[in-house]
Structures are given as C-alpha cells and as structure tokens.
Length: 261
Image 1 (cartoon, rainbow, N blue to C red):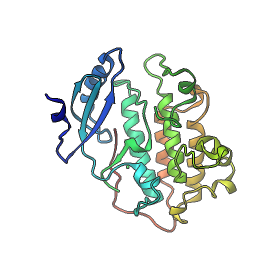
Image 2 (image 1 turned 180 degrees about the horizontal axis):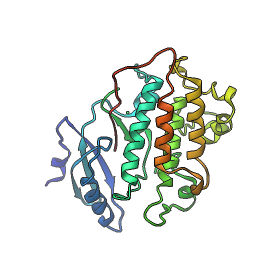
Image 3 (image 1 turned 180 degrees about the vertical axis):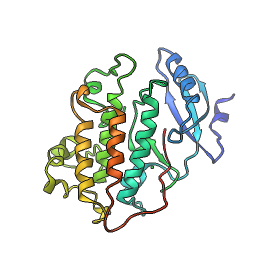
Image 4 (image 1 turned 135 degrees about the horizontal axis):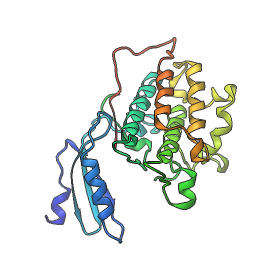
C-alpha cells in the first residue's frame, strides 16, 4: 500500500494514528489483536489497521455524535447535556471499563478521557494520569490486573462532567490550572460544592446526587491506588446515583449509547 493511499477513508469510520516507539511495534500489534476480539455495547469496535514505518493507523466504527468533550467542555457548542444524561453516559462508560477489567479480559484502558468517550446518542494525557504513573511512568500491575490507574482517570472525567471545566487549562490562574487540585477541597463541603456545578445545568439536578457524585470523585482520585474503588464498586455507586431523580425534569424513554475508544 502506498503511503498516500492509506489516508482515504469512508465517511462512516473513525480513525486514530499512533506513533510507534523505536524499539518496535510488537506491543502495539499485541494490543491491536486483543482489541479486535473485544465485543461489548460500550466499546468502540476496531474494524482494521495498517502500519507503515513508525506509524500505526487504527480504524474504528464511526460514532456520529462525537465525544463527551464536545458537549461539556467546548463552551461554544450549542447543545448541552442534562444531568440525567450525564449520569447515563458515565454509567455506560463504567460498564465498558468493567468489561475490560473483567477476569476474562484483564485489560487496562490507560487513556480514559472525555475525548475518548464517544456518543452515538445525546457520550495517558496530562491531568488524567494517576499520580503513581506521573511519578514513575510505569503502570502498576499486580496479580491479574490493577486497573486503579483507569479509576483515577474515571474520577477526573466525573469531575469534568460535574463542573464543565477542563482537567488542565493554563488560561486559568496558577492555583486553578489543575482542576483536581483546585476542586478537591470543595467536593466535601456541600455549600461550596453547589457553586462549582456546571452552570449550563441550571437547577436541573438533585442536590443529593451531586453530593454522592462528589464523594465518588474523591474516592476515585485518592493518591494511593489501594484506596481507590474497583470498577464494580464505581458502577454500583453510579447505579444508585442514577435512581435519584431531579424534581424539575426527568428524561423518559431515552438511553445514552456510549462507546470508549
């Protein structure tokens, strides 16, 4: 295949380019083989791939509504997501991660962030990486699997979903550039907590659900990996939160179809 030919793709697929390390592409070939065998409603399907020189080109199914990042972090975007839809999206994401972390698959996602949560109905970047990974550059694996790195990133996405703010923004004052460090002290104080909720939600959310959401963020972003919950515990908490309904508005008959890439 000639280099210029491989970039022409049909409009119904998504693509992702990966720069291969100089040591070779054995790791990424193994990763592609594993990904091609995954089958879950909340995992984007890998349709194919090709590699040339130091580039690996991955082709996924097309998810036409874009990413979670577009809806909650791009302030110029016209559509907003209601609280109930945000809960459904994170539930779908948790189910996808639980599938990857299962004893059958034993896969660490490693790159969970809002731009990798794709929606087809209205769902190791700085800020998302767990402290132990930032410090050592090594993912901690013990026994079958330690997915606590993914849990930290999941907590960061929960925080972005709550506030509508990016995990890192150098346009903010120095003490507010890192969203996790800035917001953590407020998450355990109810009065301050209500002041950091995404303004685009208006009052269309139940305060009790916000408080439980904040507690889950604090659990997921614990500094020590052993203090973070497993994905099954996260999923259970999200399911309980989803049962808390807002008094002002309740979306009926809609489900968020979520895919992680």
